[in-house]
Image 1: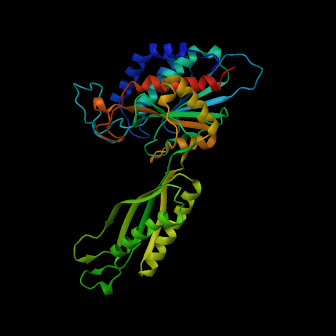
Image 2: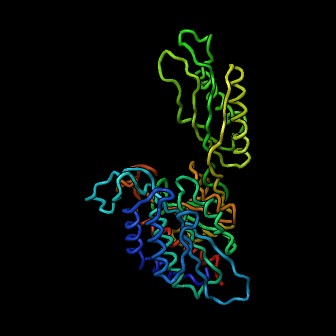
Image 3: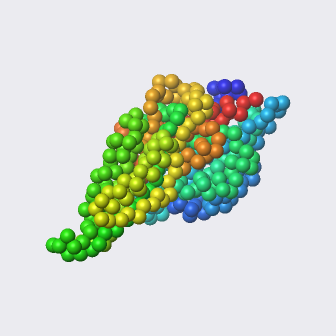
Amino acid sequence: MPGVGDALADEVAQRRERLIETRRYFHQRPELSFEEYETAAEIARRLRDLGLDPHEGVGGTGVTALLRGQAVSDQPTRTLLLRADIDALPISEEADEGVRPWRSQRPGVMHACGHDGHIAIALTLAELLMARREQWRGAVQFVFQPAEERIGGALAMLADGVTAHPKVDATLGLHLWTPVPVGQVSVAAGAVFSSADEIWLRVIGRGGHGAMPHLAVDPVVVAAEIITALQTLVAREVSPFHPAVVTFGSIHGGGAFNVIADSVELHGTLRAYAPEDRELLRRRIGEVARGVAAGLRAEVEYEIRGGCPACVNDAGMAALVRRAAIATVGAENVPEGDQRQAASDDMAYFLEEAPGCYFFVGASDPARGIDAPHHSARFDIAEEALPIGLETLARAALEYLAV
């Protein structure tokens, strides 16, 4: 890796304590999606202290900053986008202040997914690349994205031109990930996060007396048949080699035990990795639901709300990150094989704009009780993951932008 060398590990180690302090600062001050005003202001302040000229209010509450290398070359330059998400979740943190004095200071709001660490890594990376800017050429577009938890911030930032001014050639991002133990880095080509769509169905029947169902059209019974029928889509219409999920987590209808309701509402989620499976299921859910309802004298209103595509890594960019990860933690700590996770992330939209890689930095340590799942009130990260993430991302960026 030209211009990197063993000195990079020393530079990361020198920034370790400040990196952890930065993560803890943002952990204490979480803000919800599209409400990250103080978070964005602090990010912008720290970028200005580095000598950068950040743009605030991008995509609502996002921040961007462009850092240009100073190395001279007669070859065309490239722009690399580095993304960090910045929002928190509506969760009350469960942590003893004596054990974790940096716990959230805002009741009902918590960084329960590692975004505080992502902010800290990206800010420290800007400092590190600034110190090395004579060793690389091109530009780095730092993107601090709001509202990942609501799946909306990436599209809002793209609408404001973050990949067009300047045109982005590649993109990188990481996720601190507790399903992977600290000390390991998970990198893979292809789909690593599934797509996610919100399913909304309203089954319309005809209300009546519970003792006289023949005079009514019972939407509860129809809803039950629809849920059962929709499971066959994954079992019988999607290849057994392609994972997909249709889950209904919410059913609402009726108000009394002996009254047949007029309607029932179903809310669920659709997950898939292959775009063709996603499109098939989005279409067939509505077709099957309407067909079942029609056979039982009911009607169905169907809608897909929100959602995002799968995160799909470019093979070349994934290989680049794998080399960086191996240089950071050793080949034995960068596992091979299927690295797919059954979650979603609107990093997917940046990966659609330019070839890129979204990778996972192990952040759990069960021996110390750091093993709660993401989005849990007990969530925490092993902070040893922070310098690992920083060094891996730095090595990948420096190789991509090498003279």
